[in-house]
Image (cartoon, rainbow, N blue to C red; front, side, top):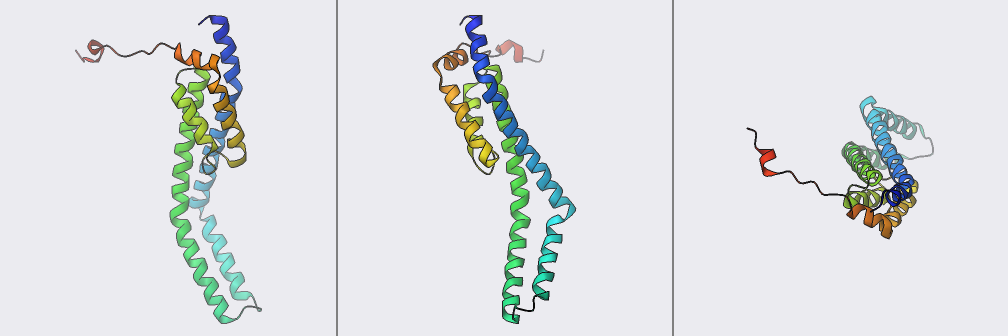
Length: 167
């Protein structure tokens, strides 16, 4: 592939790759904010406020208050499990999307680039409303014949067996 056509392809993939980097950064940022919320006990504080509001509500009878307290306790227990898993998913997703974006920008791995675009479109990983159009844009760009040729023209470097010998 000629250098001028390779630079043309590099210009084609630049903005979708940057978009994927933005989605990755937002995913990682969301993980940090959720982690801070867990670490500072912000959720526990909110649950305590809600319980106080239930107790203070004069329009709610005792049976309804018991029901609400029970529901709150179950929801709080669920959040104790779900939020740390959410942080893990957001971090892994953000890192994988970032790695795929880097591969797209450098025209190194079409597979990782596509995987990043697909991950960006998953709502719980790729920043919902932003991830879907950026992921679609990246997939459409990756499917372009000139871009596919650019990925195919990248030499695959495999280590020689002698290079792996520690001697």
